[in-house]
Amino acid sequence: MSKSQETYLKKQREKKRLQKKKEKMENKNLRRDQDKGGLEIDWDSAPENLTLSKEELDVRAETKQINTNK
Image 1: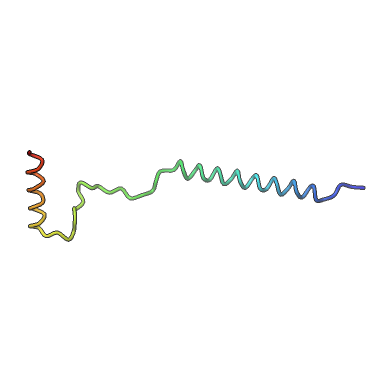
Image 2: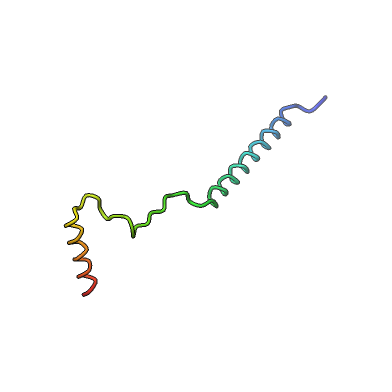
């Protein structure tokens, strides 16, 4: 009498499951190691608020300068 196929199929399923788990971990590590692909904003050259008028920006700049000189 031969061995049942159930044992062989169980082993094959387990191999596939482990292989898939290994691939997922490798992909996870690759994504983690890659640079973060976000936008880099140069905050020094960006306007503070687009809704402020020119006079309001001037007043704000003057008050900042006065506060830093104290």
